[in-house]
Length: 156
Image 1 (cartoon, rainbow, N blue to C red):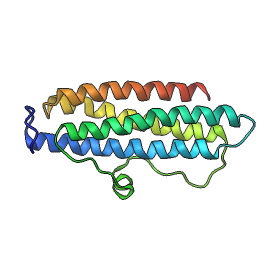
Image 2 (cartoon, rainbow, N blue to C red):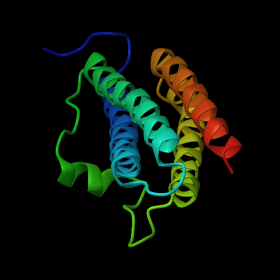
Image 3 (cartoon, helix red, strand yellow):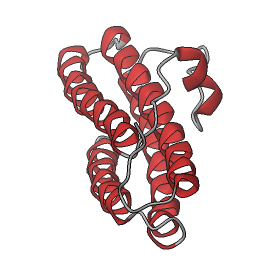
């Protein structure tokens, strides 16, 4: 059934395409944070193991909320690893040491990439596509990523 929410089908499609990219970014960032949680080594292992667990817990909620936002505007969320890897702005880890500092730097860079992507979509989604709801949602999500980036940055 088509969503009749005051936004044209063409505009809902355009918004859903941006949200699909964001969903892919969130999923890749979640996976990378899980990787850090599982594989971190060093004298700060326990504190960083717990820290990364808190971080991926937040990201898990973001993933669900982005997917549900896509559904709310009448589209289906991409839900395969193949789709996520094709849509994401992020890259997977290359071979690296499993130290907390390296993970934190990588994750911070990814959060900053996500923040820039979201920030670049807030006004166009409201102004060009007439979707104030998604624009507002993205503003809140961006603020969540800004806080996570700040916390990561504070560890450096």
